Image (cartoon, rainbow, N blue to C red):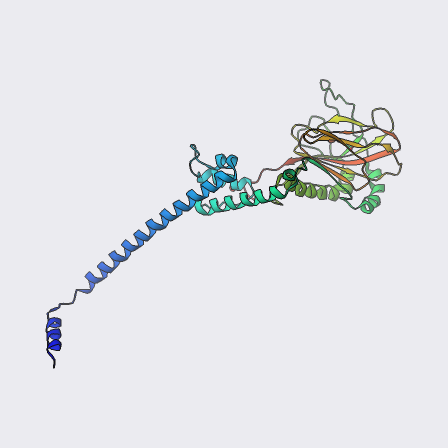
Length: 326
Ligand SMILES: O=C(O)CCC(=O)C(=O)O
Ligand SMILES: [Fe+2]
């Protein structure tokens, strides 16, 4: 046996093994320390990531930044962020980093959509004519029923109103709750045109999202009032003077319906754009005009025949809050 071997065996014979308990405790403490260190490091990394997202947000939209940040606008407020995501129809995860990532990503999408949308390309109109939005043949087939369902429902806004009870040429499918003129929806007209009305709402929602650069499907509208108007070439029934559809109306649809008495005149005039322009539309049955809120327009008088239109006044629906049942 060599000298080196003898030294090694002597040394080994002096080492006393550590008790198992002590070894385990030391290992556990070491492991816990490493875990703590790792947790600290990843929390710091998460904080850095959140701060970077906050900076990106400041570049993307100062307005949104104000809405989702704390009182000093220096970092995210988890509560405000969750509220904003809910308003945009999304479900917050409850994790700040995750929600901040979602926010930045939807704002990026918004920016891309906006860059591609008409508004940024200079199509500065907040209304649009869509030709044959509803199949004209389908409307032609429905026309006998529309005509048979139609009744005049005079509106009485009350003695003190400047409208008085002069408007009597519309027949209502939907009447908004607590409306001053006390009229009821005329069920036969709703049965006849209810599905066309719903399609018009869907088309309007898509158009509105494109116009504003929102994600498709992220905005929903409810029908405040919907009615069929029949214009005839007699005084008080032949036109609708220049107006906007009311301060609470967030958007409107005008759908040209067929007629069995061809008319002359009856063009729709719209005042829109910057600088303001007067645009004139002669609409065929099935054509739709979508109007953003507070757009001035006018239905010019007809001089013969009769003209029919389905009109919707729409209200933007608030996204449900997470506590509300779906
Ligand atoms: O009949 C039309 O063309 C326009 C109708 C309208 O603007 C309305 O009823 O508010
Ligand atoms: Fe109108």
